[in-house]
Length: 112
Image 1 (cartoon, one colour):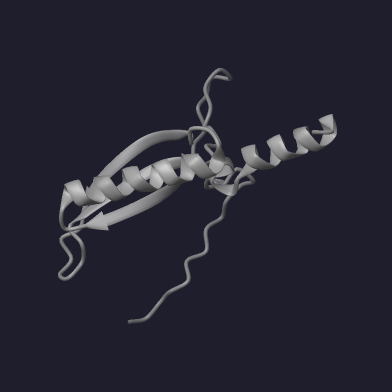
Image 2 (cartoon, rainbow, N blue to C red):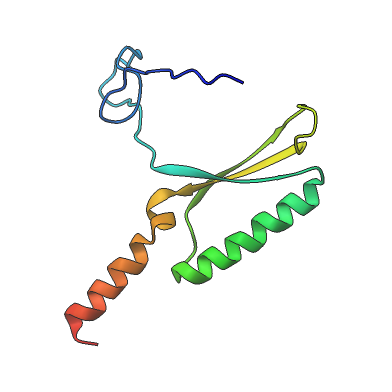
């Protein structure tokens, strides 16, 4: 299996520099800071249960609900690959623990 490196010409927001932009100033290509968290299995309920369990653990760690903008379900017909591919599209700042750091900094500043 050979790997080929593909170079993309992207702007600062991560989209192609030649991508047509909306003409009206009220419209925009948004910079969406979301990252997929993937759960793959041949059994859909099992993949969903693992996604739910992870979401509970991650929210407990974060101390607040994780911002999930979408749940994406896909299929993989590749031989020996798990058939179902469940992705939770999560805010990357939440996954990095930014709310935790902000709370800790706020507590330090307030002297608690």
